[in-house]
Length: 215
Length: 190
Image: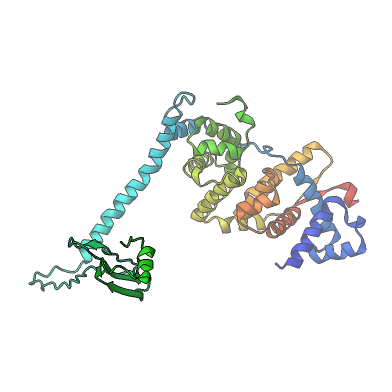
């Protein structure tokens, strides 16, 4: 049945609830006659509609439920009849009952699977096993050297020799390196200085810049 | 059991049943047992023993499938769906389909004059007798709509049909009944 027919039937059904055939408009009568054979059929159905709407639940004589049913259900599903005292007992009872059925099923399924396994598995062949070759890769520790930040190497720059009248000033290497490791500046200065001769003004200025007292 | 439990909606009581509470189950049982027995009794043409057995099986299903019930759904539609499926399975087993069609189609139309209460009672009795011999799906439709007074939407849910299909089927059911039980109303028929 298509949608249009369903709509027509719905309309006729609605009209039937309120109007007799004579009370319908010409257009409505035309639709009714597309669905039903005659105006009298419409009116008969209208009457049936009216009578059926009078039927109420319980009009027919039906027996009452057997009291054993509720008793059986309570015994089977609610172990404890006293609801107020032990509600957990009932919950547990329901839970156990729910569990019991799958346990049987699961047991049967396990036996079935085991039977299948033993019935269809490949026969075991007792031959010399081939040696197992296992490749082992040993990795040494790999250390990655990070480039240093600026490094200052300072050594003794002033030392008394112990000989009278002579001081030995040693200005050793001073090396500065950057993060990339490039040596940006290198200076080597080694000089023996005779106290009697003394430092030149330029040397004194240099030693002072290094916080070294020049005698 | 709390004093106001009797006013709780069915769906709320089902929450209690889901938690294994006996009081809520008893209340649901008291609301539906008579109705569902009536449904089975009519579906099985007055076979009381079978109706009682089916009533017990129905509530066993309600208890065992309680966890599957969505408490946002309509309990009435749910319990009728279970009952309807039970009847369908039983009819399938018995294969009564042909017998019913033959019985009803061979029946002559009876005319009733609706101008007294007795006539209405007789008419109603004739309707019920006719419905008993209908095919199971038509019978079920009649029971759900006119005796259980369920809405079109509820019936569509129970029978897994579209609402339009339910309306059409009801229309043709009424047409069929009108053919078999002619109502003579002097006011409309002149």
